Length: 307
Image (tube, rainbow, N blue to C red):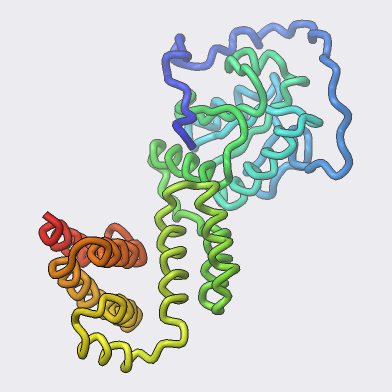
């Protein structure tokens, strides 16, 4: 998500002001509501609450206890929506699923803006869906609109970290599916799954590594490891033989040897051959991931070879 947060400057009083709710006011005329479409998710405001109290419906009568007071002890994420509005119907189940994954570490409070318009006014809601995070009785972060579930998960993790709540990050089922396809040898399905993740969450390191592994698996398919290494040893100037040997070494757990092999190719070649070796080496770095110490060392060696 491109920084969905709303800056704290909108909270001019430092905390949510409940004074407007102390004296009930006549409900304003209710706007026309689009007809609930068949098969719409039940997890919109007013739908069934989640198990364990992690999902609750909030009204003007309960916001003090169910949101502000509850947020003194644990984060509360408030979802502003309305049944029958497609984006609201689409996003509510995603939030509810995340609340269930949270195992009670935080509470999802659903507000129907048509039933409780003054709560929406209090939070300065401009459109639906809108999501606020509260902790310590104060709003700490917010965003509006629909975001991909992976980005929502990351946002929730940041909220929890800011509140000092330590929870084990839930696994991404999309990555599990892609990894299962890779492990089973269904490279086409794995590639499609990893690319879908990257379309939804650009620069996802795990998906990038998975996609690089797909490429690696395709390159070595049908190759004889011992023959590939012997061919590279016999023909040090054969760039293709060196690239295949490096792939075999990575798959054999000899990544550092593979990196050194390709850095040496970069040093002794020029033009298209040199660039091909460089790109191949970078793809092998991606397989390992950016935090691998061997990758950091090899990157320095590559930079020295190039410049």
